[in-house]
Image 1: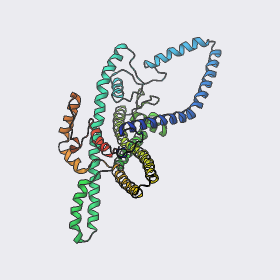
Image 2: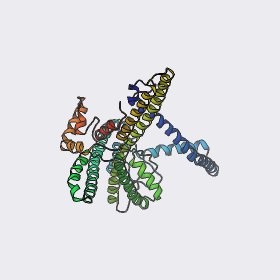
Image 3: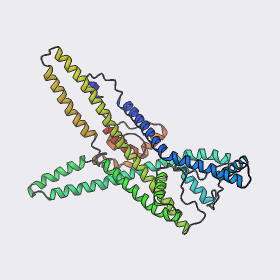
Image 4: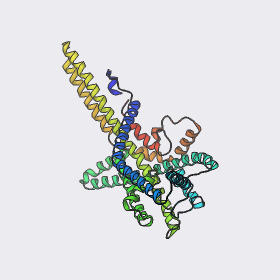
Length: 406
């Protein structure tokens, strides 16, 4: 890092390892915090439900003169039948063509609700190979969708930026419009869409789709609106617990229309939320970079303070002057680096427009080279890609720009 290049001997890891370790630590703390919260919220109802079920089971056993082991064996048999698709209430067939199509959709999208699972050995073996190809292809589809979403949003944000520049230019005096128009060209060439605006737009789109889907699920499935929102997040994020699953009844009013709308809403929701997660990862990485920079800055300040004290104790003639110069240069460099790294901007429009002229060819070549194990382009930053596959290449370019300087 830059701080250690000037003689700092702080035991800090390099940028990539430091970011990885810091992220691992934050995720561990996040897991611990989440476990504590869910345990405090969900454990008491679980204990109450267990006690209530034990009392009801004992009452049923005594009233019907059935021994507890026999009743437990019968319940285990029902659980096995439930896994195979047998339910106490009438539900849609699990393995007719429409049911199987719904199942494979949850497989390749990695949602995996669990309401239907293969029980035969042949079906389970086929699922392994089917899922390998299907999940990989669907993830690639999500990446390409994200690429086009970012492209569209970049054009929209650039259009708004141009309008803002035109309005500000029109408000100026006539003798300054000529110079302002030249400045607009330079400003547009170097302009970059803010990653925070992109994240906000994707978040709003995900929220709108979730609210619209919940308004449909609530009356049709008989769920509350909060339950419907919960289902939307679980499904769109591909978590897929399976406690609530849409389109599982045997019959609906306007059944074909509802199932088609359910499929489209889940598809759009998964795409939008997947895109939101990927864009949000840029902000998380910027936060990690900021923490690492602060850690490095404090360590370097301690080293410089110790160095200055040693110079002062040695009565060095220029110790105070050298110390002031070191602090001044470091402060300026730090502010400039922070301004570049924490700007929250994505790729510049100049690079972006140049890359989009041949984006399809570049993407196909890159995917082909990646699939064949070939070399990646060494100067990919000039065409808008910096490694990775599909849409993640665009964001990786910005991630490379926003990284802490090595």
